[in-house]
Length: 143
Image (cartoon, rainbow, N blue to C red):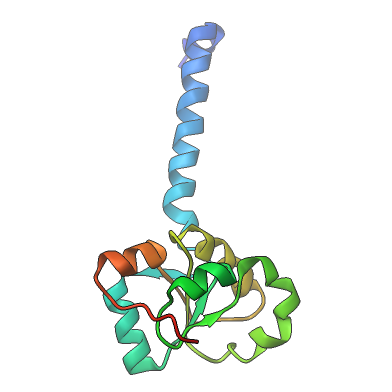
């Protein structure tokens, strides 16, 4: 114990300890930050939620991306217009909601915001629409 100050006095050791603390905190944040807000679910679980729990799918991509292909019966609610669509979000408070975006990252961020606004049953499509397509599940172009 008496050698700890001597150990930390060396700039190289101090750098290594600081680096260890920084990497550890980033690791913990990465592991636990995803669980704040919504549970991430695989495409197969999304189909179960849609079929058995009548889940609503909110597609957070832009209107242009949405028109190129989206999950059947999903609603386009671009993440950039979230603040403007407060009243539209009210109708989803008591429903099971699945958020999807292009790669899965934006939906996690939006889930945190929606959780604070009172939506309880939130799920995020893990990997986004890209994972949906990789699972060979259908997209539709009709609205």
